[in-house]
Length: 314
Image (cartoon, rainbow, N blue to C red):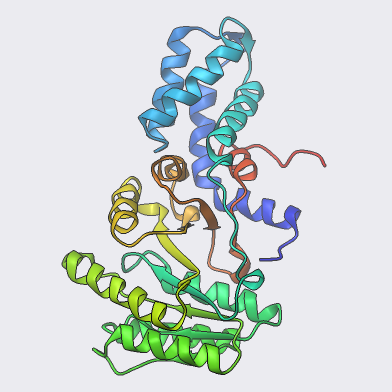
């Protein structure tokens, strides 16, 4: 993802506008004028952060940090936002990770997991387009073999990205397809192999067994594979994303999280408790439909956009 930082910050701010507008209005209503910060205002601030889906533990820590710096002092709306951005950024900066498939072994095997509807297929397509745009040779495997629509959608993305594509008839063994894709990737000199998977949580154990089988078979060809297992989470499901992270993280093992659809929710703060609860870092976030709207996660930029602040001067 090679987007210039300034252009991305503007898109990030626009994508998080629903969240930042709601938070900004609440901050304004609590801190109507420059006045000493007292316990009542702190309690309102903590409640506001919980309502923004930051979760009670993160909200309490952020409020405590804020109180330690500002309690008893006169504060205005701008100061509140700056302090909140600093505190949220502190919460998230240690949960920030890098997705660098072109610097690893070749072919670099990336497995995409997550529930149906999370934006998994679209995320894979955007990553493919970014990689081929940088000159990489990319192979896409349509491993959600139970949903014809998912295969068709991924084929559209592969064509758009000018990536090569592999699929099997509906109902085929996904692990067999993954094995063949990795074998082809090794034989034909691909830089990256991107493998989509099913996400039918209504049959949770069956899905987990299938994903574990995919991992087992690709390890027969490369013991280090998959080199990346990305869990794609939909921000619009709110704190349900925590439950999804728990299910996939505990059973499959996740190397990084992609949070999508942050532009579709007024509670973008949900990324905070997900980051805190996960053993895996946040690597990418999505704030729109365009290829350029999926970018590396920058904790400080996210925190400033979430509370409605502009990009700091360079």
